[in-house]
Image: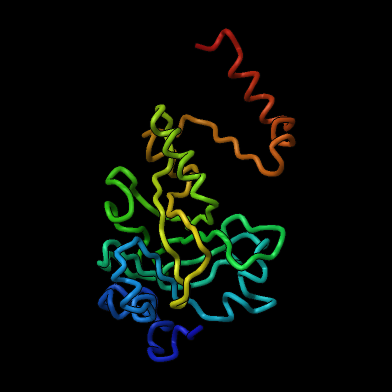
Length: 231
């Protein structure tokens, strides 16, 4: 794993100046072998300091259950599709979810903020034109792409679902995990931009499915849905 400022110390002095750097000169672009790019598959390349990943006290992988902005680390990302570099820029990276048991790879969440150079991912590159503004993207660890299949089925029956597709993730030039899906982050901002209003209630549950079904907010939602007076 390389240091972000090993050859270009100016990269960490002023993140907001990175827009003037050619996309191919970003660390996340330079560390990826050309033969990997030429495979033509969607690729998300991430460049990040080793300590921000693996340090026992401050690394996000070693502290995967820690939450909040205090556990967001600066990084560079490059996105490739069909062998073409479509985007490169700075972002904040966090663990998305986080398993109880230590495993070699985790789902990752990327934040776009002005402090990193871009306050959103450019529209029409990863997802369709309607998926704007993209303030966050998720590289979700997959098992046989089950969640992508579920999203596609839900979309076919008329549900409003986040856009997503399969992607290979590389961290500092090395393959990270086996199967990933790149998706939008479903939060209040996403719902607001797709509904066109904020007249909705978002119920978010965690834990075992049985515990979720017994939760008071969930029971209230069921009561509201089953109320015959509501049409």
